[in-house]
Length: 455
Ligand code: S3P
Image 1: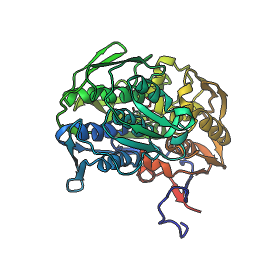
Image 2: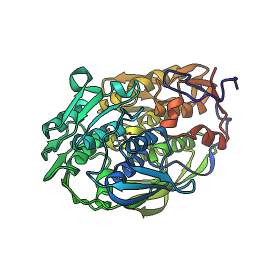
Image 3: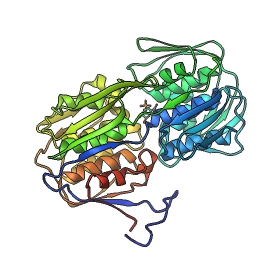
């Protein structure tokens, strides 16, 4: 390692590369492991716990940078949050009208979820606030939350004619709204429901397809009246939210990298325990099964209103498929790693109707097409998807690729490198810490030759 090995990444500063060696033939991913807590549920635990009355205790919270930003934002608004003996986090809820005006800009870092959910909440508070984020977040579309919130009476100003952060929010009492979202987005749905919390009357959101439903499940657990009728969710405003005890399940979006690594490496026998398998999140598992993965879900159980299971993965010879468009929202964060599986499957995989991937932490269609092609995969980029001719005998590697600062692209390319003939260097990987701080150590623990390079 170079002499800079102990430096932390900082804005505009060093951003390490990962050097990944191919997995030796026959050495699969073997063992029993857990992955960090679910990112979506972790954000919501802090947000709902902060505006509930009384104490909320959260076990298994993801201590990734995105979630820590949300925690810092609520501390800046006067919420006491502390950790008990290095374990559970305790949030002293202040109630729906107990937040204080922050005396500085709220920096949400890389997190679209943090920014969009907070914008909804802050729009109905009685104070002024400004939210911003890193270079990636400042290019991501915020009009999709600002426009409907403005129809509720919110006063929000942003760059590019109110489409981009930083956003200045002049909080005030809003009017309830009935809104049909143009995209299936849990962030948009949740932003509107959060605005509806502190608004008298009924807020109703209809989506074109069902996106993840953690907001609905968790708000119900906190005591709000939330009803679902098909693709429509209805929330009664001004509920009394009561502090809860929450056990955050393992993040299926983090488990996904190990699931695909296990499937692609001959000799694998891997169990990932305690993974959240909410049906609005399991699209990847369905797609992989259609490719012949033979995944097994063991010990299915309910923990705090969320389905949880242990996933058992072994090597499988995958076949290409056409992805049904209705699965896309339920696998939205897993496409980077799905594209890796498709690149090593037998035959052709077609993904369409996935244009939303261009609005994530990077343009994930482009980032993955470029990265995988450099590794030797056969990938064609379309407007709203990718067409991939698999190479089941492996990829070439021996190159440097760029994660485009996107955590999921970086982790996906790491997995692809395991099935290359030569080593791969992946640039700009610091953001892995936003969702999976010990990803590299977990890979190393399974025998993967991966090293962090600051040079
Ligand atoms: C999230 C929703 C998804 C997902 C993101 C987390 C959430 O975004 O991509 O990583 O926690 O609500 P959209 O539902 O907006 O596509």
